[in-house]
Amino acid sequence: MTSSRTLSNLAANAAPTPYTGSSATNTNFPIGTVVLVDFGDYHSDNVNLSGSVSLYLGGSTRFITSGATALTGTWSSRGAYYALITQVGICQPSVYSAMQLFERVA
Image 1 (spheres, rainbow, N blue to C red):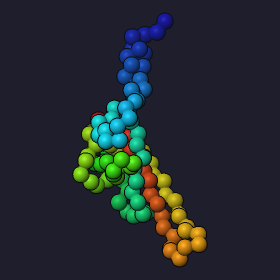
Image 2: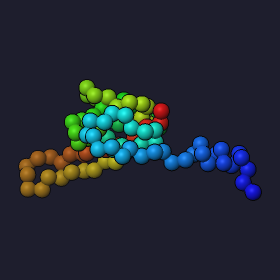
Image 3: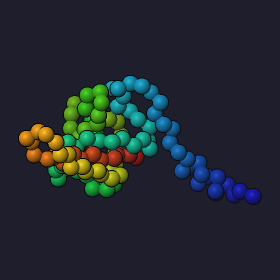
Image 4: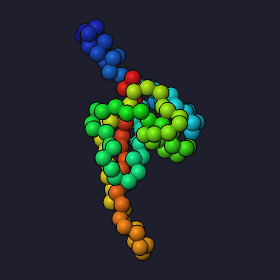
């Protein structure tokens, strides 16, 4: 037999409703949504795990940490990715690219 307490726990921890829209200018995502944020070149502005930051639309193709059109809600860091980009055949120095995952928590 399943207790009502167990059912309550299941309901409270149910998966979030995913965003199913197609607008490139949407700023209001369901709680539980995870987005990848472009931090550009590697720098010390990345957010510590579980730290919060305001997120913004970066045109119609990316999310950024400063801008004019803010996303609704509270967004917490869930991890970062850094990649060394070497431009082969071009006389440019290598650069780091930083991306970070954020989850809407409220």
